[in-house]
Length: 375
Image (cartoon, rainbow, N blue to C red; front, top):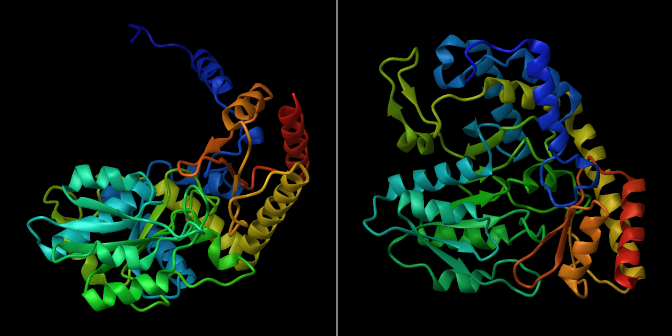
């Protein structure tokens, strides 16, 4: 640190230089986050100093968090759901399984997840000391309930279903997993970090939420397709009793107990989530999802014209293409400025069609993909 501080102009110049090194979202087809809605940015700045880690000082911001949870609960078919706004899907998943572990009090707990589960569950194994058992998938990359059942034993504390898998955008058969959970009297957590703000707005209807008896908790991130600012994840429980195993005493704060994983929590991100959800409403989100799905279908159509097929017809705005000489093609696309990613098994080019993209960008990508395949 310098002995004497720099001027505001000098500091802003340093920041601008750093920002110029960051990637613009314009050609990013690998990310599950996007540019936040302008109203979310305004709300975020208005509440930039609020800390929900000590919400007794910020009762207005706490009211906004409660309203966001209610709005999300209504979206997931339970207006009485409880929970809080987290930093994202990883924290939400950790806390959901921490609740399951603490409720069961097993000496050697394990959970059963699909092999398609997000890598946050590997962190859970390490942090919480829980064995994570991974069940195989069917031909459409959904978890096979019969394979999941074979992994359940007396030490199993929870099952996990994915509603919008990171790699293929697939939705597990949540109703069948719920039946398994009920029959074994265990916790069922649904990771809908990405799908939570997509699935309710698709033309085809899928049941994945609290409408299914047996679903205990849901992860869903407003900072993904919810168009909010980072960090804004969401963790919802069906029953308030599920929050109790997360509580710790906070004797030197204005609140008596805290149930979040982090201490200091951004009230700004909560305000951003509230603002954009109130501003867009169901109709606004439907338009966003429809637009993203339209671009997704056009991308698949263009790929098929190049004799490239998706591994599955897109369920949501995620595409996995069976591209020949995958790494060679990805390298050529990267030279043209495109950011793509890959799936693990089978290897495919993974593309996420987010709101920061537009129809012209999709056409340009198809054209550049054609060139890369031919060169």
